[in-house]
Length: 356
Image 1: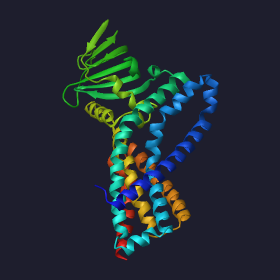
Image 2 (image 1 turned 90 degrees about the vertical axis):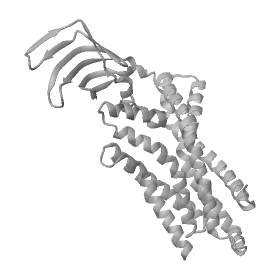
Image 3 (image 1 turned 135 degrees about the vertical axis):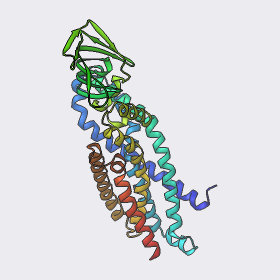
Image 4 (image 1 turned 30 degrees about the vertical axis):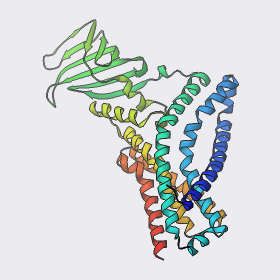
């Protein structure tokens, strides 16, 4: 059961967060509309399609801006409590500021779990629908036509090179398969101009088989090769869909499958960690907001500084993710760099302020 104080803090924060969230969504939609209005008008789609696009994008918008919105709501609430002398009243009744801090941190952690579930359900579905409307209805760009070039991967004792592939159609051109004997010897080379790929069975058209150590080759009309790799699993690595369009469970299975094929998974592994690290920013930004409240009490100064901190946080976050995707740092450290850095600073300052 919530105490009277906690119930009051929760009710006030939910009201403030709702108001700020509506403002944030409104600003986001206006900016997004201004960026896309020319393309939408040129596509000559109906108003219903345009409205469906922006409505479908709402869950993603909420997932993206909620950490900053939550921080602002906490800062505004604390500033109002200082302005109304509510903090002084609490201290006069032997209720320390640390109790308020603990409530907001626990409250933020609960909201983090809710945001994580929301992002991986409604957020993912909404973004997939948004991309479908944008690419097919507005831009008339068919996902099935997306191609991947110069693809390398490993399947059991085979190394495969594909010059050009259309994963969603399960076909490609310019296939070369190197059959290995041991770890450093090529037993056979198979080349095919075109192929059809299905999970567990790839059909090669007019393949040429070469035995390098026997100096002989021969041709066939078709050849079936038992490759376990699903070609569609490579679509995400070359897709224009951002990570928000795939759930954490989908990313996990793709990472496992691509690891088995010997492919580079730094980008997807970073995306997987980011799916957890980004919602956790809600807790980190709450800690930062509470740390600011121990130094300043003016609402205008607090809001201004919080916006600066949000900008710095996202700069470090993007920096870490970019370096992790390039393999310069580990995926975990890249995704969590901003949370670790700013979280440590925030908690350290709150503990120092309590001692003083």
